[in-house]
Image (cartoon, rainbow, N blue to C red; front, side):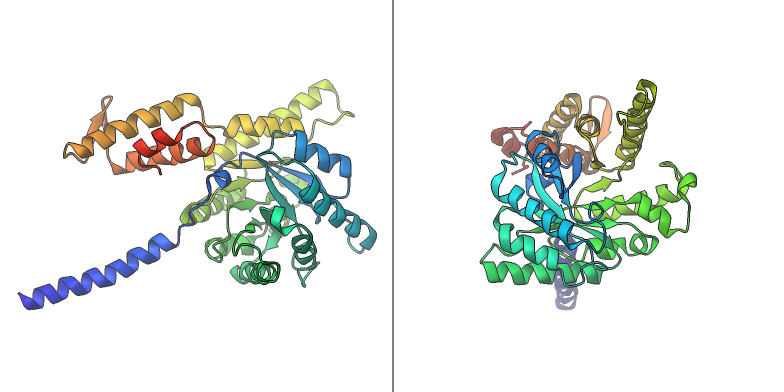
Length: 354
């Protein structure tokens, strides 16, 4: 009997460590980071666009861009863009929008100068950065180390500035699970499908959002994000309904965006990148959790809690079998609903969400 007790005690100790490791891999996000239905990216060099995106848009997250919007080897525009980013963080009312910017990336800025300049001038107002062309987990750890040093120097909360890596190449896709696990600062993974397509050696005319190779990348990104508990954000649709197009062409552009967004939503993405207000509003509409889905999740979560309290595990709810897997699906909906303000604290506590 003593030998048996020793075996089970050893198993408990060993498996407790395993459980702690599994649980520790999941990043517990603040509710605000669960709401990323629409990322609006805007060039940091044009103040009127910055001001409009930050104060007037329907976006959940606004990203002020220092990468693609600035020509390489143009220090004047880079200085202008940085100044606008700092001004926007320090002076504008962002409301509930998440406050992000995109630095130039490792190849163009290996010293992380963009990060240092922005954080030193506006770090206390910043939610995070979206980092382009990540290729490895080591790059994420390098960004983390830079941010930790800046936070220590500036007496900012440790880990307060968050990271969303852009997955934009075949090598990044291959490493995406390691990238996702590289830092506790992660609050999302973003798919950059056009750079990804270019990394495959493809041309623009062969690209389409539903191509099998794009689907494979989507699947890995969504799974890697889910493995650590953060949202996956879908790519940009670059066909805009611009003024130089006919009414029919503008409608077709918005239908293309809608189709892309619905495809991404059904793949498990939590939101989508946008570049103009019409796209942004449509993304919020498409990725919003419907009222009826929330009501059903509340009803089933209550029923399951009652079943457990009465000594049952698997049970029947409205004629369908429900178990812990069913309850986990409902709780995914309820966490987002709480972040959206659709559940009050009392109901959230009743459902064991808090």
